[in-house]
Length: 414
Image 1 (spheres, one colour):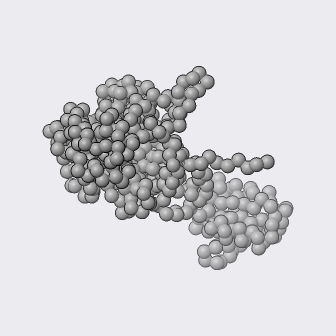
Image 2 (cartoon, helix red, strand yellow):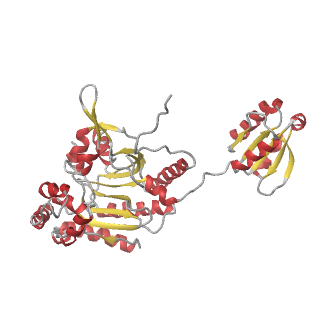
Image 3 (tube, helix red, strand yellow):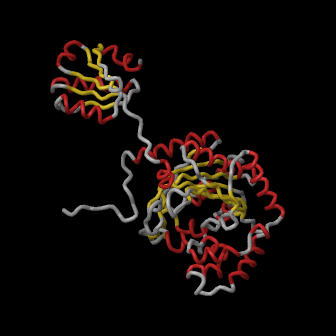
């Protein structure tokens, strides 16, 4: 029969690469816990209006990229293209705002966007997502940026650039929108791409996010949000940058940084790398103070970020999983059961290793032990079974000892 192959834009993540993803998640759990964040596990499938209402009807995500389909009752469902909207929905639906003043959550898992597959961008990709609700303080903004930097440092990833901007608030952004409308009014279809010709009429801020080179060049002289911010937004942003300065965290101010989603206000940030090609962003986020209310909750502020796991994995190189403690070779059919029980005893005590399940040649089993990377090769033959011993070969030192089976665990630990 014909082989069934994976869908274009979807990838199998197998060992040893899967170890890198596990390392990403375990590091995230450890670092985020130090800051008081707790894990949330949320559905992959949500109602379509959750994303169209939160992300924005005019964004590329909603317009072009979502995997959307009707269910059997003709309800429109979407496989999540990002995590924030789902976390906010869970926060509101489960009444977390009534249980605590400040809620800190993180989650990890697959997201789905219909895009042209390329290096660092797949149709099923994975993100680590962090969200905090209940505080409008610029100190929370600074803390979450410090935490992101801490996480990336723990992963051993260097040479990253943090870009920072403030997008203002509903009080001061309308004047900026008017200035952008006036600026883009003079450009026609020969100068802006088709998408930006639509965006300049519906949401001119989106034009600043366009990746088409001609559009990027035209926006270099566009008005800057910093010239239109209200005093409150200016003070908020100056507090954030002041804290980052005092904490010794380097960053670059980027007045064109708007991110790709409509819900961002005030502090916005992105972490980029020059080592992974055109898709240079490895993490990004910001403040979204109106989103909880937009999705039916109380008018409470929020801030968060997401990291692309595929891109982080590319930057981490090739970290290998820990080597097993032992590989147990069994010489002869009669010893297979005894070998399995001995290996189980070692595993119950916390050691990691494999045991031969068939009696292959000694040469073949020693080769398997070397390939496994195990520190010790344990050899169990007829003589060892009869004498209650086991041959212990230290693969690093090249030495070999005969050890009583009842003293084996202590010997290996020593």
